[in-house]
Length: 124
Image (cartoon, rainbow, N blue to C red):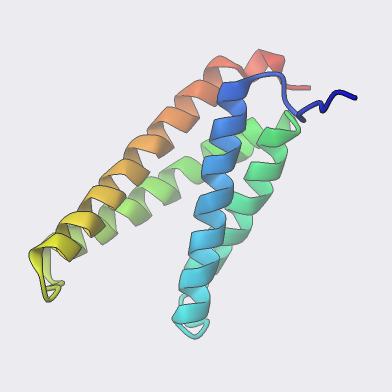
């Protein structure tokens, strides 16, 4: 018996997992913020939809990824700026971990957009 993944491209599987993880993390942030950050909830839902579409190689998922790219990068950039300008964590390692995770998030948003755009002809 052979298990068949939903996608032929292992890179697209990684991009799909990235967006699923982002969607879950944003949903957790929404719950921790007592549902006051509705824009985080919208991003969470769209990221989870995007993860499904990328996993199943749906053509609409490339358009959704392109539409979500700017809000995600702006969201990450604003949080990174806010972290540098205003937030003060009790210790330096927490600040460093937070800033590095935001930088990695922004870089992976760019990588996922460019990878999906390069593979868009393989979508059905």
